[in-house]
Image (cartoon, rainbow, N blue to C red; front, side, top):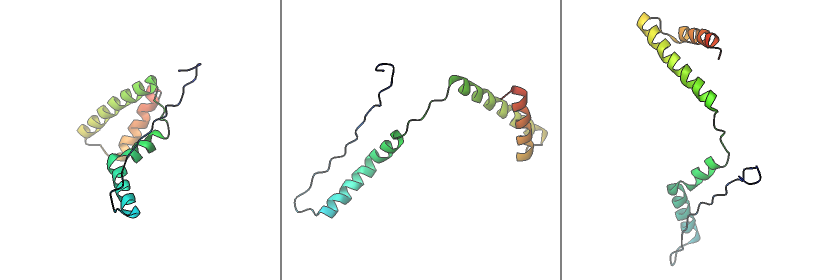
Length: 101
């Protein structure tokens, strides 16, 4: 942190390919492209292009609580033999209202 602001971290990914004797430019480019794809440099650069906001602790806790409640609901409906998508969504909506989510 510098002066209260975050500095964007610059990261450089490198793939090096040296030209072989009597190698054409086309085959050099093909070999370079193959190395780039195999190394995963392009995928890493694309994922690092945009920053993903970390979810807050409160949201993580609420989603964990909701997940446990939904798992219990699913088990309960399966035991009663009433489990289908419509019933599950209706009960899920009621549960969210009850929990205030």
